[in-house]
Image (cartoon, rainbow, N blue to C red; front, side, top):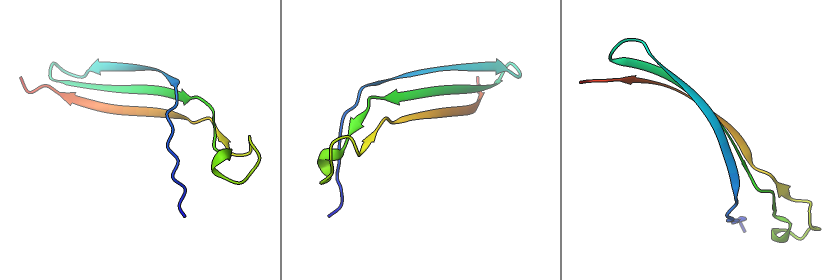
Length: 71
């Protein structure tokens, strides 16, 4: 049977970004974000001792964008 695990997890996100105008109608920007969530133990889902199937999810995100003003 497939494993179906659903959990809610608390955590945090921090990030920064920069945006600059190339002209009066065009801007470009870049953003970075780091997110980390609470440690979760999935050992209860398997017939294994506690602590063998744990995870602390985290990820890095980078976004690059351009904006054009039509007005």
